[in-house]
Length: 105
Image (cartoon, rainbow, N blue to C red; front, side, top):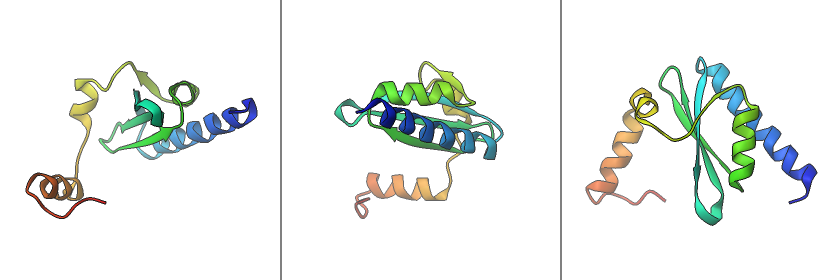
């Protein structure tokens, strides 16, 4: 990727992380490697809301996470996981997968 394109991608992802942090009272971030697909930026707000963003490379994801107003964790640890609040949608979706329900495509 050309350097200016990489910088734009980092900036866009960092702005998305900042917006999430603002909406949820702050955010902890973990960057997880996805293989050839790139990396996932896992977001956990202080209020328990969560989300994720996908970057084309681990380096871009890491740069976006560190340039955003976020606490960057080395891994998605127990503290972050304990704060995640799932809703009815997630539980129904997980149950459908587990119980042979409709495919989530």
